[in-house]
Length: 440
Image 1 (cartoon, rainbow, N blue to C red):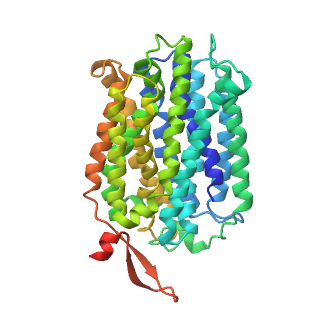
Image 2 (cartoon, rainbow, N blue to C red):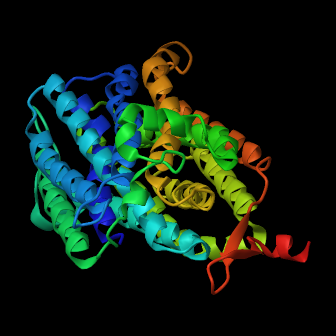
Image 3 (cartoon, rainbow, N blue to C red):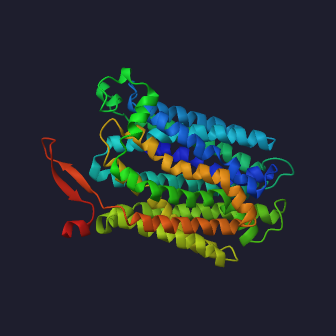
């Protein structure tokens, strides 16, 4: 189920690790980066609810999620080939926005896809595997420029435009994305959707309700757990967005002390930042398989709060780092938080959704991810200029503070229980989600 998701995450990891460096290589300033990154949350806000609702009501011989997943994966591969060919900042930004659209078309059906095919008691495992694939894809993407430079002796710098090693990494990423997406499409046989699955359950005839009104109905009936997680998600992803925006350049310029963006030490600093990104995603891989066990012992709410606090400590500790290897210690906390962010909130939400609603509600849930990022894209440039004085390291520390606030807010979310069904399919048991709940 998640092999194609891994390939798409390679594309996502490449743009996360390299977009800021590409924009700066084409003339962007640090204060401009939040606005240039606006395409990522904006496309997520617009595309995911629409694609989610469409996939809920799609009837096709290939299932209801797979057609969108395959189409999005193909577009991701095309945009990965095109982006490194940009010769101006305007071209790079336009292609980046199109890449974000393709990524969101592919990601939108992938989360309900796992939820559709797994029973409730195994969904934490399913989303943990999906988090594993995110980490593995990001590791491949982040380490690819370093591997291509040292293995194939490609140039890490360029007088004009995107460095050759970055362009080659995007080409390899496109091939892996396309191949893995096709592999999932061929290997996983999604059950054929029934007509009743293609509409919001409160609507008798799906043809009588258009797309906009269906999404509006869903917005008016958000599950309680979705409202409870709204603030947690918003603060968590605002903190993560600081990492996306400034981690590579902060490591190169502020931690390792590169004199300017044209120097070889800057290129090597960005490469080391890529390895740091790979390292925290390696931690994410390991923690992903521990999360189900930790969730059973402590509950998903407590586990998520602890993981978010680890991320807060990791980011704030970068203020004390002045050489490359201690950065890896800070990345341990970031990796722990990242593993939990990618799995536990989606598991909690999926348990509360009825069949046929998961696509649209997962898309709306993504609004709590994208809206704070949109706000930061529009306003964080002013914060960088007038408050943080262009210091990227202070931006990362602020991200740590936001993760810490998310952890405290998570503790206010009640621990849910998982409904079980007997052999006849009727619900008659509630399974506690933690040993603590079991004892009580």
